[in-house]
Length: 424
Image 1 (cartoon, rainbow, N blue to C red):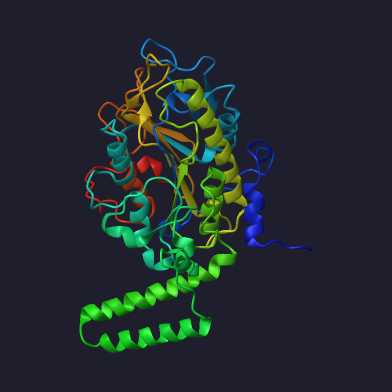
Image 2: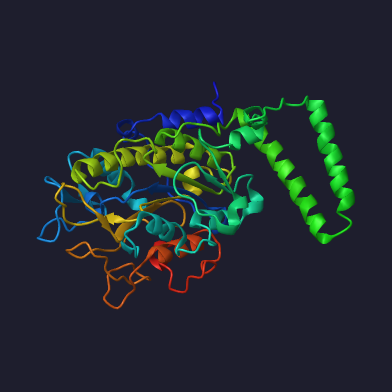
């Protein structure tokens, strides 16, 4: 019987389109993966999506302008917005509703892209705090060659930059791991022969080891050098299985992200939808209905493929990646409920998030919007809208993700309750 390599399995899975994926086997039941074994894939719809296109189900009334032909549909116990132009949204909710959690009415107290993006990713506007993906990765940094792999999207590292590496056509990670960066510099330097390179490494290690006896600080530097050298060699050895310089198209981002997770390279991976060169973007200040519809259809078609790929790709500790990887899909802000004079929608400080994976209690919607698309208070224990509850913010969600990861949820200075209803 012919066998497939792990890379061939990944390539086959990510070649499946949304329509074909709908005919495949259902997603396997989530295993009881320990928090420390969970890994995370963050997908940012950077620019501000319109919750009325998928998540916010108050479609009628004088305070909102939803698309013509938009209707409220049910997938299990999850209400969502259906539209003829977005069949992939229907298929995704129909196939995976039992594993999905939607958080509605998230409050991000800014309508500035720069501020809202930092708030959504880190919980605060401090330059020192790392984003949630980096904090999660840093909690187990010693277990991964590249704890947080930033393929696309936003990244705020603060003092945690040593746990993050960028990978794409514009990054230097691939060239660093192969030594090609020496040839690409302004003053190109030829690569040494392997025997010469090994001799230099051995001499540097010997020199540093002898100096390490002098001070504790030097000993720490030696240890760091040795660790970095070992990681570089291991990363270079993965060159045949992992392309760190892939394109920025979202399909390429997904392929690299899943490869990195399947190989155990990273604990956190961050992607950006759509790619930077895309003509249609989420920040739709004109022609909003058409732009948002096109982007939601594309995003959910990719989510269908991603879910199927995770379900059929071997995990590192569990049978499949679907049992190891928590997927978090979010945008830094929403869009206004009413159209502007250009047929677009402007920035709005209330949004939604979509999650699935191990530890996420699926089949539910937490929180909600009122008839004017304003976030409502919720009971963090049940997730139900409640007048005596809390207005869940980006920091509430981030701290809950830390808890899902088995990391300290209050490490970033958050003092409020967690969204306990989100955790299985």
